[in-house]
Length: 556
Image 1 (cartoon, rainbow, N blue to C red):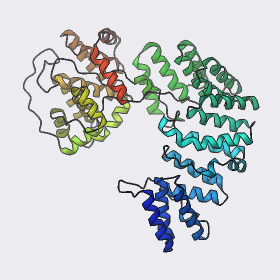
Image 2 (cartoon, rainbow, N blue to C red; image 1 turned 90 degrees about the vertical axis):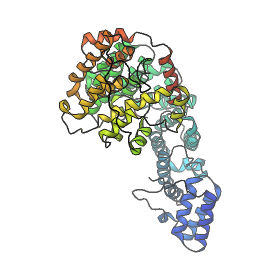
Image 3 (cartoon, rainbow, N blue to C red; image 1 turned 90 degrees about the horizontal axis):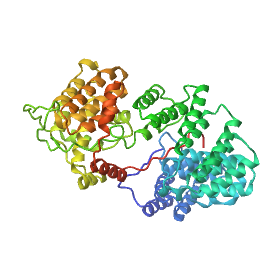
Image 4 (tube, helix red, strand yellow; image 1 turned 30 degrees about the vertical axis):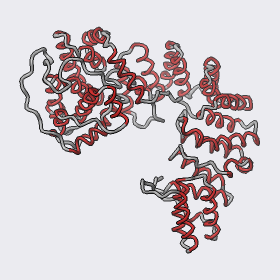
């Protein structure tokens, strides 16, 4: 589905004027284009629907063929076709298209029209078709729906109410209606409908819907009981095991949670939901990064998982170097001035690279951010710098672009201007990872440059080391090499009592396959408080990032 709009788009009223002129001239295709554009801008405006009805009458065949479905169909045309299908006695087909429009633009009130909210529609659809539509809506929207988008889903909730009024004991309808109500934070209604569904016809999915609703209501004990009953209905649905484990872990019952996930893995060691949950819970238990690296490896080796998981991002979120950079140490060259070398010595004078191209600066401004979901995601995002040459990348480090004129840039400028420089360094070094990837790692330009930066350029050393650590996350074959480099740098920082030792320690703790002795040293050093600087960064990132919500593993 295509947007088909831009900043030059006409208001709905002007589109209607053009549509009526085309109608009067008999140019029905031209009129249809303008009606579709008006619908996209004002989907519930009565005048738009009046003009659509005139167009349908003028066409002689209901006007449906004036809005054909193609590979990239404008969303306004999809919605127009939906309304005409309903007028032609095919409301189920029309609803399918409205749900597709909702999936495309969830904040628009595509369904806020009388034929959708009429009690008559629920009678015509029947309970199975109504339940199918509600399941499609649930699959098309986030869980939960952000508050600004909830009002646009009210018509679907009205459809659910009307259908339940006509079919008050239909278990599938009650369950899917509960799933929709829960997503729009109508939690008491979700509990009530799911409870009625289970009473009408006990089933695995009925108990799952009830368990999710009860969990959203904060009734954890009852939610767990419902999910356990779901397992009794179907012991082979391992997604429910994962949800039970996640719920237990969220309430501090980690050992019970691990017991449930081990039961799931005993049935199927490669079931994606169980594997993701297991690694997340093991990391919660001991904080060892090897669990997250194993999860990243599993995700890379199983790209066709049943659905998207957020366990790795949840574990890395807010953690130094795993999900965000750390502030710069107070000493050294964040201002571009020479600082103490990484071995405690004074570095020799270095030639300054020429400034980067305007294109390189533009790409970097669009990309740089103080946080990322996890190291492999940061690596993937940095591919936007892959086509820059080495001179441009080094130029970005020597001549950082100005802070972007965005919300992020304004916050960084007002709160901590030095943090932007840190962002530039980190993302430029990640860009270096994509330089000449056809070269074997051991003798590659990307390794050589990053190692030189880590050893010889104090103000960029941590960013370069983070890029090397990220390489180890995405390529198991380089892990031993990177772990040795990180151990070497941490030992030097500790030996010379460098001010960035704590930050390097956190970086070491994010390194795959680090040896036990260095890991123990890193844990000791990471325990040193960095005071208000790290706290200020966390406060800043909370302003920039939405809170994390874990989505249930099971079906809606």
